[in-house]
Image (cartoon, rainbow, N blue to C red; front, side):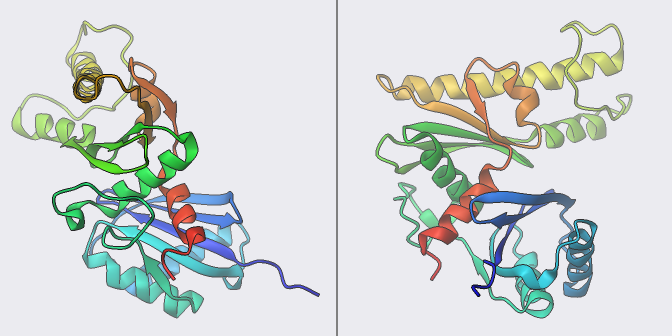
Length: 263
């Protein structure tokens, strides 16, 4: 009797959040989003992962492989040891120096964050055309992929959370506010005014940057995709974002694993 196929554990370690997924073949069967803690120990991380699995009645022994994109260097060692100690598997890391099947046209490819390359690969496989990936994370990044499937570069801007925190910290009378879509652009109180500024200011930032990218690529029509925690909120107001893929990075990690590039 053939034993059941092992699950693939994918981990996207970002500066603010860590997103964890489990794939059964090409199907994302479970996913979690937790706060990234740069000082977390191997055992703390291991116990947390085991607890998450227990809430879904998943046997840790059913996990047979693991792949990770990490932009927080202090956590590389901890995540590697967690997989070895608690799941008895070797964790593979994605980075720009690997031959991932997508040429990187950056001056120094090693400077490209692993998550950005992963997003580009997943987006191109999904749409099979030139595309721009907007990722709403700690930073808001724009990554450009050519019609031929080459990573051409991108843009890095402060994230919405960073911008709002800076406003709160540097203006003594302004409160912390939730990021939501305001009812109208002109706020009638401080909270509504701040929510309008961050929401519509960011829509303007996104559409303005995308427009400049399109102007530089006259004659092409790349599809604009969005991912990240606030992708849906901004996409609903953007003129250019046509597709929201909340698990784009997780899908990219799976695609790279299945390609054999990490062997």
